[in-house]
Image 1 (cartoon, rainbow, N blue to C red):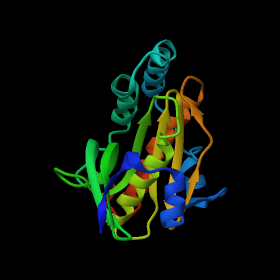
Image 2 (image 1 turned 90 degrees about the vertical axis):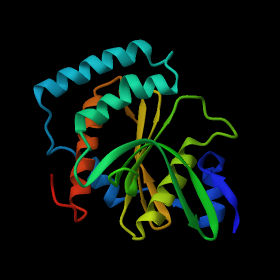
Image 3 (image 1 turned 45 degrees about the vertical axis):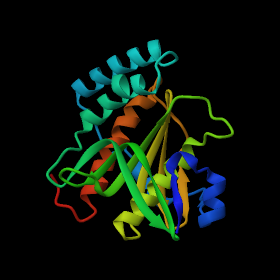
Length: 215
């Protein structure tokens, strides 16, 4: 077994070389997640989103990563409320697994997972990335390896969901087998912000449908 490699060390090319991971251009599971026409928002939710959006428009270009998380992303998570008796939201928690005899681990900005005190059976991983993407920085690769570790811990072939946030832009992902699908960007400074909340609400519905009793 080789030395542990952290999430930030992985790129999409590494994942293609090591695990044969490939992007799929059309994905029923992702399309189903993003289909939110049946979900409606309450008036207070719309009001809260507009207030968050106003703050984002004003400050997104000067916030650092932690400020973006604390002052914007966390409010979206709280509005959905993933903290139930069966699963919870966990921030800055470590995941570690062995995949193809390689020990892989790292810290996930936010995940939705079973577990009372520590994350177990993760269903969703979120990676926030504020800096410009360079040669040594691949936010999508870092998210995908976290999702692969989540799947290894789950020990099944059910989809793992994910998102990475690049400033005002949100991208949603699904991982099934050795294929992943990625959405177009949802721009939180535009009307997309309403769809972003709906997509995160739909995620909770999908988690409940995995055999967990609805809350």
